[in-house]
Length: 193
Image (cartoon, rainbow, N blue to C red; front, side, top):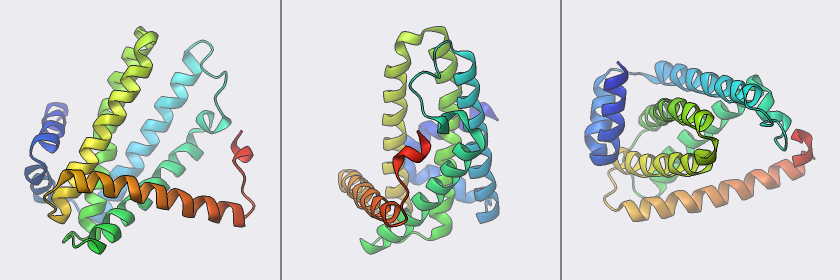
């Protein structure tokens, strides 16, 4: 099972059309996609919490959010839901052919794939703390490449550079809109500090 997931991560980078077809061929529906998102978010939050509890001095300088695994998991599920909705809506605005169920499936796959990257990353960072930052950057780069490739495959886009620019632009617009919403509701960043 683990070998199959690792192989599918590689296929997702090299041939995203085949990866999306393989995921769709598994008969995974929206309910299973949501379960995978909840599972990945929960396990990821617990792993982060355990790291904060086991590494000496890891809690210094971190906000309380990292130390609250339930809140962290719920925020990750919310972020995944927003990501899937944006993949669906923004992709179709630019002529994409994907459906929300496909966007949700790809989002769930990204969450599971990154969980499989996070576990060895955490273990290696605990063994050699000096390389933790480098591994985090590599992990983010892998996430971005996977997101670009899978969104491209879901919507039938051909140019990965345009998809990457679309992701960056969408992130900026969504962050601005969310910050306006938070400000209008009186939610300030200090709430989590």
